[in-house]
Amino acid sequence: MEQTFVMIKPDGVQRGLVGQVLLRLEKKGLKINGLKLIKVTEEMAGSHYQEHQGRGFYAGLISYITSAPVVVMVVEGKNAVQEVRKINGATNPLDALPGTIRGDFAQDIGRNVVHGSDSVESAQREIDIYFEPREIQDYNFLPEQWLYE
Ligand code: DAT
Ligand code: MG
Image (cartoon, rainbow, N blue to C red; front, top):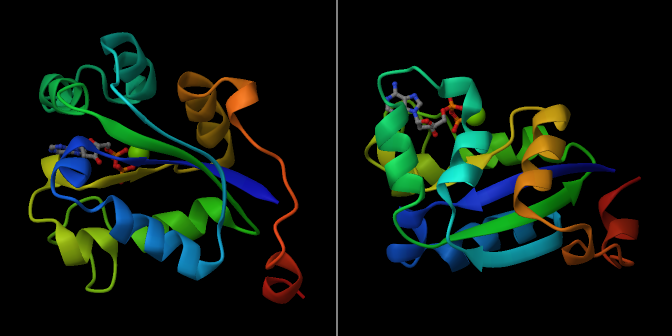
């Protein structure tokens, strides 16, 4: 099984979309291994978005992501990284298809509601930024026998 890191960004929490995001992940059959509401520190944000350092939008991205609480998750499934990226939709909500979270709920690239890791390696790096090992549960997920052949 593959793990990915998901964040419901400050706009998602403030707009009351936590349930809507969780609903879509759960409906797909993804397993939640970790879940909490936190305030992202400057240090966490810098580490998470280090690849974007130096870009024009970087300062705005850091101040947005640290501006109010977010929900962070460790999500597991057969192809969890790709599945979550698909559920989230394109980075720019203008390109995100209806039926995706960003397509349905977002207007602006800088307020795009959710984050999902772009690879298994990024997922591991991001999980390590936001979670202690003891906060991640490895448990028997009963639907698995009906989700996977
Ligand atoms: P994604 O979140 O789909 O993985 P990314 O890693 O390229 O996208 O960028 C991270 C976040 O940075 C993205 O969710 C929103 C913001 N961002 C990216 N490109 C941007 C741009 N051109 N203008 C403003 N914000 C941008
Ligand atoms: Mg990214």
